[in-house]
Length: 464
Image (tube, rainbow, N blue to C red; front, side):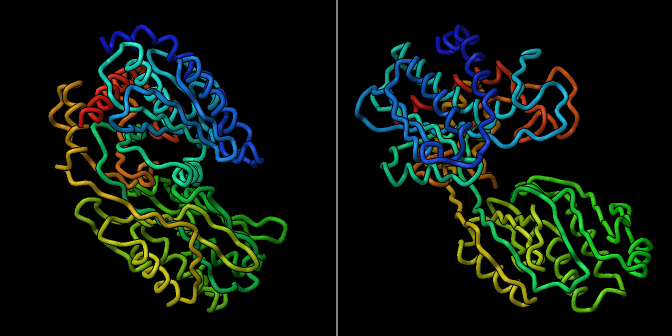
């Protein structure tokens, strides 16, 4: 009965997806009534109309950037569903379509955000609709939260928590199935070097904390002996040119998400390693480059003195995603994902000590501790059992992630899936098709599978 309901509404689901994909809801300059930019505000208004048309009571918080919708089945408890309408930038290299041009092809839906997290909005909305329209037994109040700043700060959820009490239980459809029982801590810092000598004029690369730097460029004043030395020592990952009395050094590494950095190669590491070996550069500056290379050599915190392996979360990761050169100083960003064996203060102290030893400064951007539920927790068990009831799958178990969702900010909440994986019936190159990648796509039937599962999970939470 539940699956039939979603199958009957398939065309409406696809139409709703299309409307949201075609809004480029990437954070931009804000105003009082659109704090995260006009497109993020437009996406929220679009979601609100969908909820109103579905017969739900809504409250739009323009100044804070979030929407609340309600289905009042009863007052037994309050159950939350948390999703977000903002997306990451479209990026380059799309093959099948453009980032904000929706495409339906061979049972798949393409467009920036179709999985992260428009699918979460859809499973929340249509699961609530199924409970309402099919008059399924439900004795609680369902609260649907849609945010517009999850990808770039989560100021929306912070405002929600300040203004409202959290639901009794909440699901965050933004990861995978069956259920995530813990998220690693996430610490963002900037490491600032001592002032460099006049050789270096610029160093740049990257635009996000959480992606290992794949391309980097350094610009130096031209000196023939330095140029010749660098040319003779440059590895294959580095290209060196001489233009307008400047030495231009470009490096290409292998970019990976900080959550899973195995196999990555930081592009800036190759440049720093090369510069530190140039005998014609002043020794004090070479020491700065040598220390920078040490910090970037691995994405596992070795250079920071925070090498660690957690029983639940595995190896700690510490990746550099951005480099800036300001007022003669290098600034390197680091995204550190750490397990529950470290506290937030532990991480900050380790980094401060490591950088202080080499004369660098630490500037803290943000630090959010993780959380962990026991695999036998009744909440986890109930949600996991709902998944098994729908799928018959007894192999998959509750897992942990180094990613970050709204759940880390909401009491009594767990992340779950928003779409079930279906194998693509067409060829997609490596690095295409997934979350935050070019040609981001999901299976229509996988989305309907997720709607069935989420509906059963909500009912299980009501009974718990």
